[in-house]
Image (cartoon, rainbow over all chains, first blue to last red; front, side, top):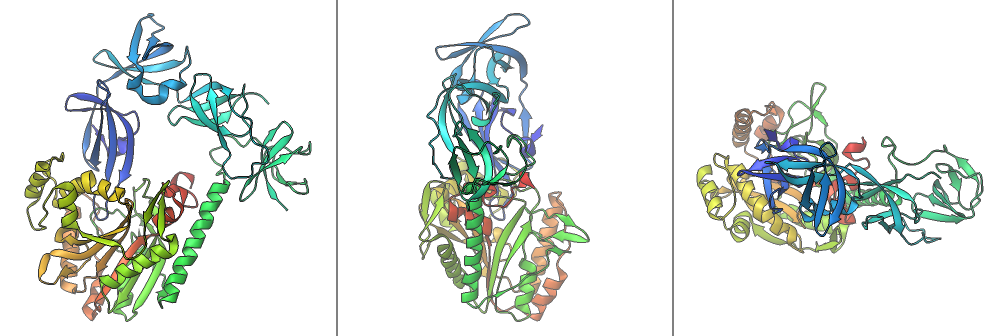
Length: 188
Length: 381
């Protein structure tokens, strides 16, 4: 069993017989009250999101899921197609079931696919992906504000905030959990 | 002179991070390297080490935004001290390591040496009131184990003040004026604003629970009865909860989000007796405690009591709290016998309050997490 200190993004739990994925959580504690973890869960089968306040000390039942390493092949309409490289088996998952991370997925990206009762229900991306910047305004010379971010589009079409010195053609490292720029990785 | 660190070198330009800004310097000298300290005006290298300023999590980078937050924090602190000095309060400093930290059921203390770090300076400050001081305030660090969240940090700064020969009403006015002095007419929460111009609106706990949760709270009903009423209101709740856990289940599900949506500050007053803590009960209404909580845009900013002055009732509540801690398997701390002794000598009628300084700075700056207004966040220690 899990308790509130185990709650983190991606934790898979079983509630009322359905598998859920933790997508957001926040520590809350009303004055003179117990600590709770305000948690958003996504139903892995339907995509429906529910919010529950889990009291410190309450237990959560782990969902019996299995994971397999698979390679992302391509997007087809609203679906994502993956292949198991050991047996070439292909599976399809609706893109909107996995949130906004799919716009960071490049063909051939190694991913982890989550199965519940042999049905693919979720995808975990590598923590970091490396993508080329395909469009971004040049940094404005003389900009002396404290805010040094500008929007950039990467090869998969996702938009990411980057520092001013990033240029088209640069390869950047992106954290898939937060969609945030981490660093520039091309040689200088 | 414009000193700063070179954080990027581009074609024909360098970006220099100074304390307050990011400067773009055209055609930088060839000797400049990323990581060096330079003077952007004279173009001299001042020092520092050449290195790539990436991915070293041991180094905390003070961006201009962070420096601005530290400056806002320092200004707020100066405003707070000036506020109390103007009103004739004496600033005090009581011990941070004590034998008896707070007994509140839901607070865990951090052990330190031969005692514990305080979870609040309340007990010691009340002893000063019993000793004859009338208006006192303190700004100090408090420590509460295992509290980390957007509004919580295990180590945080509290403003606590007391007025002897006074009531909770005077404390309510102080609170409104202090927040107004620090934040102006509008407090900020991310890109929202919340009016904090005095006087603030008021609502009782029972009205808030009835209006927003659809639950009628008496204060002396059994926990099972409260749980049934909460379930009847359509709120998911487990059986077997203690009274306070049942209450806060409904509070968090319905009242807390409603308070967060208000565009004005509010004082939530008249807390049911099981949540009295160290507050005096209302004359003629033992089910209600003279306590208020100040909420600004969903941030619970402060908690005030009309202070319990009866030594016997205080001792009894301490014993009950010890028992409740034992029942729930939590560490049981010793009773502060010096506070009980001081109450026996006599405490004048007094009002007192604890206000989270970090949260106040959040409201002054629009920060959405306490990490952004503390000098080093928990993960950066």
